[in-house]
Image (cartoon, rainbow, N blue to C red; front, top):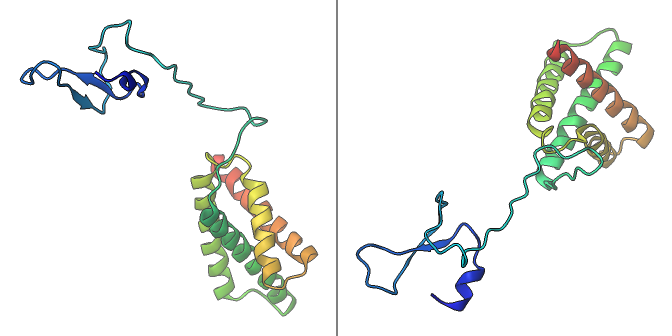
Length: 164
């Protein structure tokens, strides 16, 4: 055994192969219930598992493509809401707008269900990315904020209705 072998991770340890000559060991990359090495040589590293961090210390992961997709979906829902407002002024919603709004809202609900465990601040992230997308499409910031707020209010109502 080399002196550097004592500082390897706990998941990799040496087991003497029954057919190998003395002094040769086989490295295994899996965990066994008991280490075959003498206890005074083995080093146990404590494993810290945090199953549910508190919201104040929770850190979200960064996933730029997923966040961009979230912004696009929120922007699509907000855009359909804006289009629906214009159509209502002109006499009523068209079937195309109704079906598009249903499709985009379903996608947003699915995306929320997928992301909520890794992104506990989903609503603020969705709000920020949705406004960014609408502003990139030359929507005035106040209008973008109103439409995104409306989209996320509608999402909250759907989620509440699903829970009941």
